[in-house]
Length: 468
Image 1 (cartoon, rainbow, N blue to C red):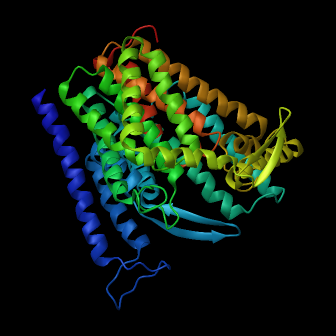
Image 2 (image 1 turned 90 degrees about the vertical axis):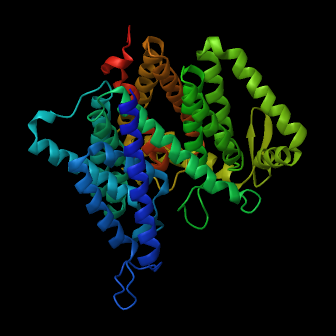
């Protein structure tokens, strides 16, 4: 056991050292120019070229040690910079270093399988058919949209790739999961990344209007950070509740401690609701832990109200701003004033529904309905009723399988992990009513990595499950 722990620590340490080294080299040689050009006179490297060099290093690592490559990918999910690859009307095509790394690791693994037949084919899980079906519908509907001149081909091409990339991650991880030690190593890396992100956001509190993750541009993406933190908090609290290891309890408790202030100051209203639903799911499902969870929540609320009244004013002010009268709607016999971003979401539902009525079967293709910042109508408008049904079916299956694994798993640590994923997933479902949660790469990469781990638990002897 000690040897296994030592190997896990060595892998994570090596990955961190490599990333730290790359970051140092990056700041020495990178010139923050807006154009992807090599400045030989100044001796500076553009971010695009730097990313390619880093990707070549990761490709070599993938052939030597795929687990190490996956750990590097985990840290890159939230800690990688971005650059503009192309600009089309009304949109910028932005690529992150982790986008490139994911493709490199995935195709590096495929090449490794081709050279070593003992590694076997890609594993099939209960989600595989639906994922492949949804990808197929996205591609077909987009081709039809291009033929009918609904969409710009270049724009759609890059966005289809983004839609597919987190499914690539799911297939990659499911095919590489082997044992308990490996699973725990990946979870440690995920939670360490979360702590690093939260430490980064702490100096923003009181300085910026809303906390945001690293490399999110000038405006930042507070909703993205909030959704990510809802998921990682759920995983942390789940393991904290069920793990019998004091070390894991301390570690996950520290993660939760760092997440709370970073999450609060995202001021993301849809994510506040997602957090409440997520926490409620944990209370409802983990029956033996209800008293502790309720008492803990009440204690935190009391502390905040008594000692941090300014925080309460900030939160309530943000929630109350929803009803600032930018536009008024008549609903349930009453006038309902809403502020600008809320109005944009209401109008998004209306716009997509009008689009969908004109092309109900396959929709308008990816990006065909424009900038709609709500997940469910966007899926309906882009992929029609066929894609929407497959998408909802996929979500239902994830929920059912996660719940079944939680109920059937014997190992207490794995039970906590599956509960955390289930609750975090439920929270993201709620956030999807106010954001494009399931196409945001910085939320979906950790999500599909965790989904792959949880779906593979029944196949690991250490985490034997029953009645799944």
